[in-house]
Length: 267
Image (cartoon, rainbow, N blue to C red):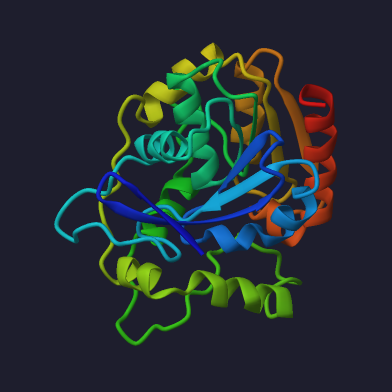
């Protein structure tokens, strides 16, 4: 296990692969953790220096104070890259992790060697999705004190996947003491420079190569298509039958798309 300090957060991360190869950093979604990228960490270790880290209030990283807003996750990503001396990263993230990547990339439009957001997109002003808003409210609702294992959110996995050994592993991986504490006492997220509304207007400035990946069944599939339409030169792939957590339930299909993209833009 490895640790670095980013701001006031003690960040836990995992690292594998060849240190002489290009670095790729995986960012998990809300409620998840670095270790949920285990399939990708193993699959890419022979060609890349591979990282995944636990964001504040997740995994094995530290909790932020209950009575304060969370640190901004785009600032956190900046701090992680700086602490490890990563100048030209490949960034891949799902859901909240993808949102962090997109926000970071609007600050650094050409810095990344490549970007691979999945399970995320943007919406134009005036096209808010009531169902997505309800999902966000449910995600941030506090859990009861007797909850010890945090089940996946609705739509994260298909019904067929729920209750399988792989799904049970995901539940155990994410249900750390850090995450349970944050789930019982939700923090207010910080999202500045840009916020969500500003992000839609700014994603078109990103010039780093981008591969957008989304599951066919993801409630954000239309938002992902909108992102593709707004980012010139971006690539877009839909994984048939895949849910929101496309990288986990359909890891092989996800990696096939990611491998093809990286082979083309990185070599």
